[in-house]
Image (tube, rainbow, N blue to C red; front, side, top):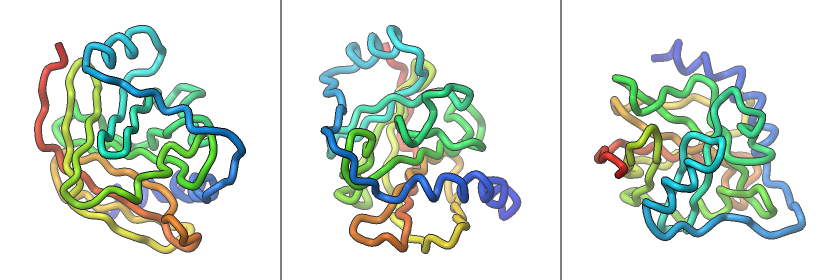
Length: 181
């Protein structure tokens, strides 16, 4: 497990500098999605292949493939290299995003989440529902070690609200998988 965590180290060091809250002028352009059919049509008409939804904070944000130029924390949420998608036998979808304020601060309200809250990840015609099991704070040292506690996980990474010296990591366990019709 330590080897896998170290694989992320180089990339995580690179993104740590991007995750510092940045005060952009502008408003957040999060789209409101009212039902799964809207989600499905949104994916069908765009070039991304997954969608992260967190109802508690009204987040509905596209996830782009690793090879896409749109998979960039300065433009969108970023799928981290080394992520394994939920269709695999063992998976950990790792997503980083800006907190703070501004147009691309999609994780600005993540601090409102608590253990037990749920989120959804739409991928490959399936809706995966995850539950937050742990929220961890790690010092910004240039290294970030991620836990892999469950066979199917989703991990969110952002800067800690009002603390420029730490990152906040949300570890989520898969609760259910359902066909998106």
